Image (tube, rainbow, N blue to C red):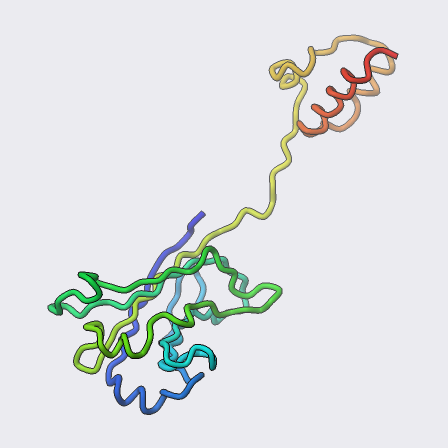
Length: 203
């Protein structure tokens, strides 16, 4: 269940200068902190890839700044400049979503997820997303709350009759009284005992 959604626009002005200063593989530019769902995030942009195998590509990552464990989905998008004709076959933006729900933090302590090959440097520099030595990245973050505790369904006596698993018992013998004094069973336990008694038959 989604509990919060918001986005941040990261505008990289002076691309030529940024490329000269941060054009080495593994070097990144980081956005200012922003908050979604009570958690603090930053965007990291690697102009020449995060790892050696991603050199020649722009890598985009979403990083969680707190020590929390957060389940989230994200989407990165290159946004077309206002007044610029569409690029990439009449697209207003080039976007890539996370590959499903991601866990930030947790036992692996992985606080960053992203797209290591969001777009090649050559394609970016030829595109109309780059204009006046500037391009803009929008990151949309959706916080998702996972249900980790399953409620235990208890079958009461009046439910037994309604479900067809037995009639309401009114007998007075000691064996039956001891049975009804037991804690209420879950539906699965009750159903299993009912099936077992049918298969077993009279003794």
